[in-house]
Every structure is written in C-alpha cells, then in structure tokens.
Length: 96
Image 1 (tube, rainbow, N blue to C red):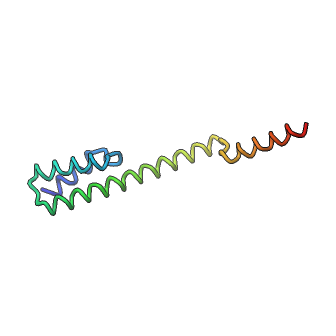
Image 2 (image 1 turned 45 degrees about the vertical axis):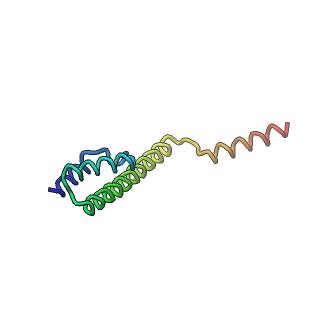
Image 3 (image 1 turned 180 degrees about the vertical axis):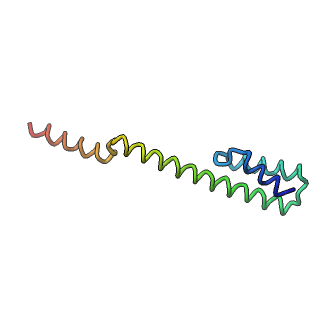
C-alpha cells in the first residue's frame, strides 16, 4: 500500500515544480494519513525531495536544449557576437 501511495504521489504532483516546503508538507500529510512509521516517513520525504530535484533538473535541461535549438535555427546572434559588432562600430565611428 505504501508503494502505491508513493507512486500515486509522484505521478500526480507537478513534481518538477514542487518547492521543498510543499514536497515536505505533502509527504508528511501522506505519511500521517497512511500511518507510516516515522523512519519510513522520513525516508519517503527524502525520496520525494530527491525525485523532485531530479525532475526539476531534467525539465531545466530539456528547456535549455529547446531554447538553444530554437535560437540556433533562428540564427540569432549571441551576446558575444553583438558586443563584438558594437566594438567594431565604435572603432569605425572613431576613424571618421
């Protein structure tokens, strides 16, 4: 039953965006309602927090990759390229 509760909790929550406080609060509520032993409850809270952090990192990595791909496809210049052009413009303006 505990495993079912864990799986339901992990699947049903926006795990990647759950704050530490919210994760602990939700886990403690599940532990209390399921009458789980304190040691097992602590283990569940820790597991939930780790999975939440892992999911957040995974989503962040996917978003970074999607943004990079989109920027590359749109041929948008990088900040370094823009700065280099600005420096070149200043140099050329100074030579007038």
